[in-house]
Image (cartoon, rainbow, N blue to C red; front, side):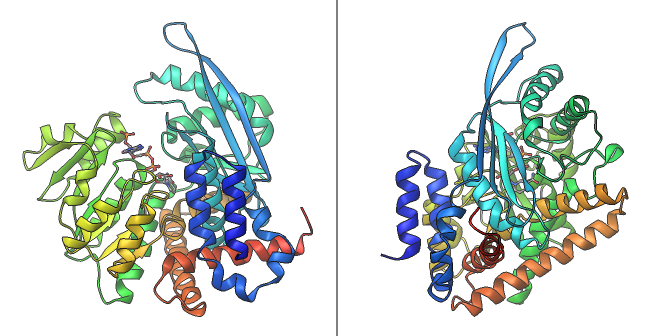
Length: 444
Ligand code: NDP
């Protein structure tokens, strides 16, 4: 039995019911075989056994009072997964589907993603089953303050630096930062994605979406293709989806869809992003409203159907496992040539296999959406230096990072005998740096 397989079996046994975590671990471990065959020292040092076990897992009660004066109780999480190459770093997700399995899958993936950015950050992830949708600003503030009243004791600019994710945007970050500062009586860069008036970085808002397009563009150019004139299907209508659409359009693509958890809109003329920003960023509305404003668009209930819209490039930017095997077959049949994962683990294992068999170019999340956390690391640098870099400066650094990630993962894939397999390239390249750091730091 191979070392990777043995460890995977133990993970499944020791973490029952955590399907998403098993899925994420399996996807990484099965691509590491070519590396593990030459690096026998990893087995002796128990690197795999250690890397799949979070360094620390914190679960806590989050009580708060709603607008009717009723006490509500949510569950908070912070999983500090790996600090071999820097302080724990990773977002907070507020969504009713959040549980330990989701936070652990995200935290595990974060290890390799953060390593790929080339910046000195370890990996963590957290969040709550709280749903900010439909809640008043006052309710969101009281929840965030209660959440931070427990979380503050576990984090710090050199210990653990959270950021946003699904359901956590500038409003939530502001409330959490305010509460941290109040409790600690310290103004420090403990969280990223901050507002520009109090230590945030330009381009952080755009970073994940822009970064996705920069990386996918490198992948396309390698095969003498580009976004120019391409039809692009994007799912989601949150932070990642909006700025991926913006940059893809800037590069000459026509983006024809966006979605939320109720359904998707299809505008064959090309999406009007100003309308989407108004609906989602200003009014906190639903994507359905777009079709009432633009007669060229139609709204469809349910979100699977989005993948049946013919396109050249598909960019899943909503949530995990949103693109399944059936959808992948339809995309291939309709001539889709490239897929880039803006969301974390949006493509199911069956769908990945179908793309592989059909030679669809595939940019995995660990590399493709690393621009967000990379820019968070740039925000941390600016906070430490007490400086603010210009939009152009940060955008250029982001672009350089994404180009360098693409170069690294394609070269590493080739070096380990799996040319063109960017999943293997990203996993192996991200893993080596962390594993080698663990190796020299003793058994910790
Ligand atoms: P947002 O909360 O801004 O937007 C999420 C979008 O996805 C919304 O349109 C939401 O619709 C939709 N969505 C969420 N859950 C579901 C679901 N279960 N089914 C269908 N649609 C759903 O989040 P982000 O844009 O920040 O995050 C999107 C993805 O990108 C996530 O996988 C996240 O982990 C990943 N990511 C984000 C980064 C960042 O910097 N923000 C960095 C790296 C990765 P609705 O409004 O109906 O819930």
